[in-house]
Image (cartoon, rainbow, N blue to C red; front, side, top):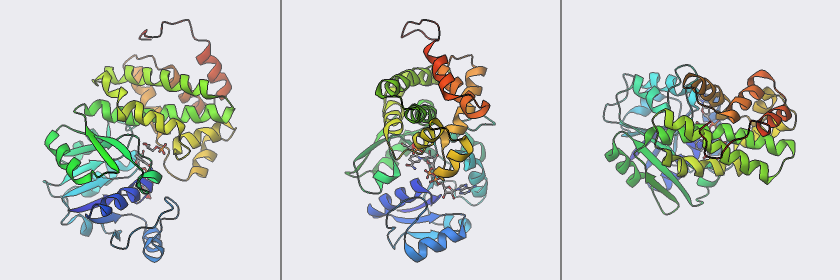
Length: 330
Ligand SMILES: NC(=O)c1ccc[n+]([C@@H]2O[C@H](COP(=O)([O-])OP(=O)(O)OC[C@H]3O[C@@H](n4cnc5c(N)ncnc54)[C@H](O)[C@@H]3O)[C@@H](O)[C@H]2O)c1
Ligand SMILES: O=P(O)(O)OC[C@H](O)CO
């Protein structure tokens, strides 16, 4: 199978290595000529992932040429450039090509999920792949389980056959709204978990954030049409656990820096890779207002990231909310 991966960051590179191991013919596209030249020379993608890139993976900057002959195209770019990349493919992508989207986010302008953004521009079948999957572990063949979703379940089964091996297990979930929202919204909570760590709080605090975070993720998800059970699955709780607890997580690490007193700008610069939770906080905050959903953690995260609120004040606000029943929907 010939597979094109768009985006040679950490996840695109790890997926290229994984699929190459499965015997597929992989082309990895980057828009950055210097990065392409560096990888071709050293077979390392220094800035993103400290692992050797096998010689048979083709590295290119020519998207028009790369699109030819590939029956699967993987989007592995940050969510805020998914629209641009889809536009680049318009008119050159074969209608039968299946798109597999790996980006986790909600567009800040349209408030659409990634599959909706892509489908606005391209008629192709879209499968989303989400779940707890740090690139740093996948590229080292560490056992990982994720989930596929699509409006077209046959396409999920097709991708399941092509992408799975004994180290990378894929389930199918028909609830594409829940799968996409879980993968995007957990990044807000992971940033918060990082802030909690950076402030010097403990496991109790993080467990509270994760559990109450999942409650507000589910509330928004259900309002947007998701099945609440999806949030207990790999793309919900599974990804929330890995992102809030792993030192590989870009979101958590950015949060730690903010909790330690760095500005958002400084934290993002030091991470040097996409921290999706920042833009997703903006989108989720807007969605919570439009749909009148109580999302106290997201609201405080929005104030910390975009209004300069002191994280200590945000924690105080969360801890002194009015008394609630745990399963109360507010
Ligand atoms: N890294 C992971 O472990 C991981 C795992 C699962 C999902 N994801 C998701 O995958 C997506 C990509 O994440 P990542 O960690 O690989 O990001 P990254 O920051 O490591 O890499 C992003 C890549 O996109 C490229 N890029 C940026 N702007 C572009 C543009 N306008 N046009 C084309 N390419 C552009 C960058 O040059 C870079 O190569 C994110 O939505 C992330 O949440 C990441
Ligand atoms: O490293 P992060 O925080 O961008 O998270 C990456 C993935 O979403 C983990 O599944």
